[in-house]
Length: 221
Image (tube, rainbow, N blue to C red; front, side, top):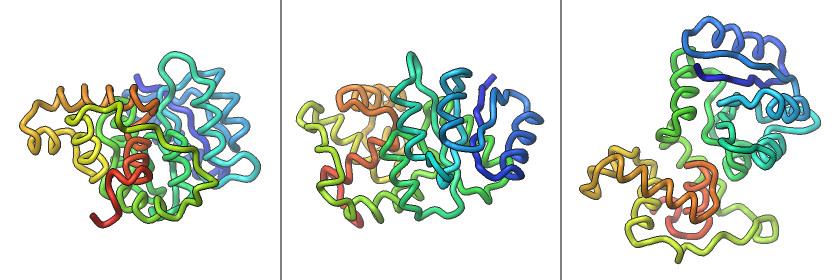
């Protein structure tokens, strides 16, 4: 059973998401929030597996809420799946940098949404990696140095881990990376886990963002 917290400041959208999840087998809605402040409080109280996070909300927005939720999380932090109205959204980029596991367009169909929740809950390949790559490429080079924390040193990674990180940033799935490097899919997952541990990252999305911001891969390259 995947435990989900739904966060959206629009009542009808929030109610629709709750109704969809409640009606689908394998999902349990543990709470719903209408703003980021309430989302932070409920995340601590209910400890969901996945949070469907609206990004543009008055007061505490989805980026700040994501940062606060992940910072205070003990044990296994929740997976944050950002909901947005359009794919090239600078707010979504900020949420991915903050640790969100992926994002989904609000006009996605019910099956796509349920599949996305299941994917991020399982820690599998970032949902819609090719779209995420376009988003990261569009905004990675627009960040002012003063607004960003210096990236970690990639020298802590082995040469194979660097290869896996590069291919991940290019939007390849674990299976595609395995085929490219002639290794098993399980080995790819092991490399990714080690990469995220060494670099202090909480999600595959953060690894993609980091690969662009450090210049390991370049937009359009």
